[in-house]
Image 1 (tube, rainbow, N blue to C red):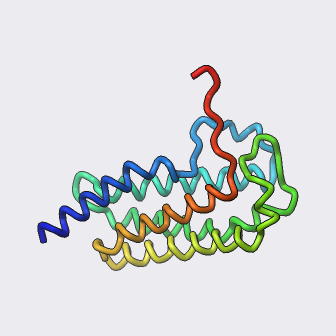
Image 2 (image 1 turned 45 degrees about the horizontal axis):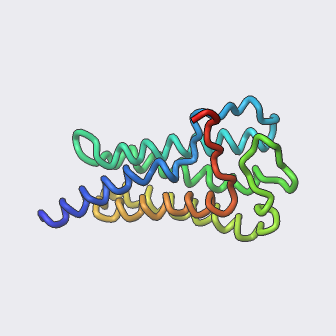
Image 3 (image 1 turned 30 degrees about the vertical axis):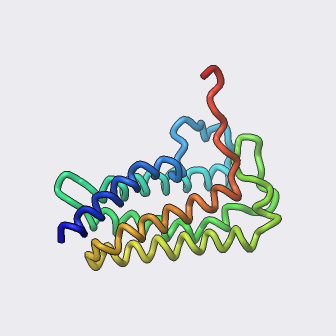
Length: 165
């Protein structure tokens, strides 16, 4: 039991340390610069997913232990919104204020597969949380966050560093 607790604590800490690198929300981005329609809609969807991912990370090691209810709810929300991702990227929907790379449309099938992977991984996490499978949750969170990061690494421009720093 002690070994499992140590492992879970280590994994939780690792997820919390690594999560900011994979969270999609960009708190300083002014989405009002984006045109109405799919470009703004997808930005708002990704921001919401980022907030849900943050909630999941916080629920992993709350003051009273892991909150599987929050994890289940927010992972389910990510799964539902992940299914919408491809519809928010109609061909040619680019804007200088968007971080979407044109390679999305060149590698459309890969892009769609990433969205499906996120949907599957988030649903799997939600199911594990709903069943109270604490030992499986940590790995499933890591896998879901990895799905986000993998897609961002290939299909999203890196965040520009603030000028003057």
